[in-house]
Image 1 (tube, rainbow, N blue to C red):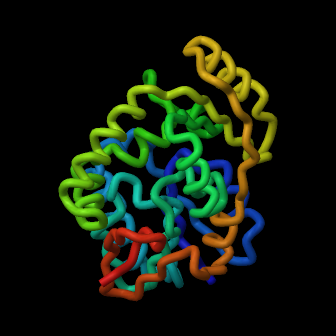
Image 2: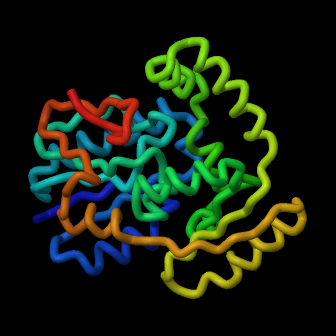
Length: 245
């Protein structure tokens, strides 16, 4: 197959490594880290790239894969054009670093007040930005509230938002995800220093390339959403994370 991969810079090394090992021909296009802070803008940029790749008669791609999660609903509403579009079933890139939705849910349930660090983000970040599971998953507060209303009803949603607002103000752990790609000792040391400065605990976790590898290898199973031309991504309120219509 000839695959076009649209990826966030936070996954740059991992995507290029997986592309180099893939049995398929893979063209990679990276998108700036900061763009996810404006979901509508990122969605427009991604849709334009999808449209361009699908219309590229010279390249004649067989599919477009996206190294993204739902990402504050930035990918919701994206439409497949003339070729299939494939998206991992992930809330955000932390799921991709950890290698699965189950591990993501376990980490989030046990340690909600966590700032997450990975090499590519730390190297490429601008300003004082950090890679935070809380900030990544809940950048769109209204979207989260709507999700809770749909799942639990308005009264319970109000309560959950109040409780969650409490823990989100009290982060207590810095977690460094080691993807095993090149020497990341400097980034790990920076994470430890940040944890010490803020009085947080530090934890180093092994990453897992499985979701990215399967995405780029064309091994699209239950961990991926495959959209045929004309279908559009929509958020679900269950373990699937995303579906299409």
